[in-house]
Amino acid sequence: MTRTTGASSNKTSTTTATVTGLMSDIAGTGTDPLRGGYTRPVYSTAELDLRTWFIDQATKRGLSVETDRNGAIWAWWDIPGGNRSNSIVTGSHLDSVPGGGPFDGPLGVAAALAAVDILKARSPIPKRPLAIAVFPEEEGSRFGVACLGSRLLTGAIDPNKARNLRDPDGNTFADIAMANALDPRYIGRDDQLLGQIGAFVELHVEQGRGLIDLDQPVAIASSILGHGRWRLSIHGQGNHAGTTLMADRNDPMVAASRVVVTIRDAARNQPHARATVGRLQPVPSGTNVIASRVDFWLDVRHPEDAITASLVEAIHHEARLIAADEGCTVELTEESLSPTVHFDPGLQKQLQLALPEAPILDTGAGHDAGVLAALVPTAMVFVRNPSGISHSPEEHVVDEDAELGAQALAEALATLMN
Ligand SMILES: [Zn+2]
Image (cartoon, rainbow, N blue to C red):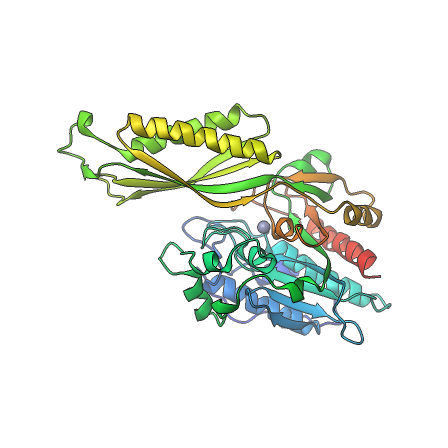
């Protein structure tokens, strides 16, 4: 990872920053020479550098910056009198998947900063306060639970479970929180903060092809597909690759491979379902060693939660049969499950009035907005991604669309703040 120190200092609250300019400030942070793209796990040097950059940018705009007890950063544009009830909140995340693209998360943060500039350049003082929120561990790439920050804020995850989550190096979330000045005893649902949020609007790069096909730069979100993550562990017999005859093996790698194909086939047979195994870890992982165990992770998404549940159950059933056939056993553990989210219809209508050209699109990708939607009126704005690819270095947004996105966000926020 590349460490960058400091941030550009040529922006002041009197000028309007471009999203492109803000994104270029952070283009060198967390680049991944091995995978390509960016690797910015929560509380890594790269993600901490991005937080510093954000705090610097927010401070330059006269926003008051606070970190909440779950590690999310809040940059407040207060109204005279300082009352924060019924606030409008925008923002996104700065962490990334391993080898991710530049826009997933940071685009929403940069667009929020640019939108504040656009709104500050207009004369009337807004009637409602605004905050830009930056949520930690949205991707779940380090501790395995996506949207960990917003789940903690809303109480969607038990704080004790969160404290005991481990990263791939064996560190608990509690240890890493402590090392980053966050007292793990106080993580969890924050009703005082939640009570201040009147509405949350997250701008995000689109992670599919919807806007390409519609030939539009910006869309309003309707819903997020239900999705979940499960860990499958297949236990076999670790042994020597040279001395163990083929007939004598209990090889969990072979069982896992067969299960991966079964997962693909099961999802293909279920309309609108998506099932993915993107991560597989043999133990002990030696070239001349038959593995003793293979852990792999299943991601399943479908608009109907009951179908997600039945698909996972069918996969579990097939996995047991395959494991038995290979002389192995299988365990399946749910790591997270998010039901399908339909965004607030009233808020969606207000955004449609502010952005009459924007089509309405659903998405298969999870977001903090989807978690917050359980407790506060929530909406999302998507910006066209001409590659149609995300969670990959090929993810892209053209400069003009990035600025159109910030303008659209500013229009939406202006409507809500007045
Ligand atoms: Zn994202």
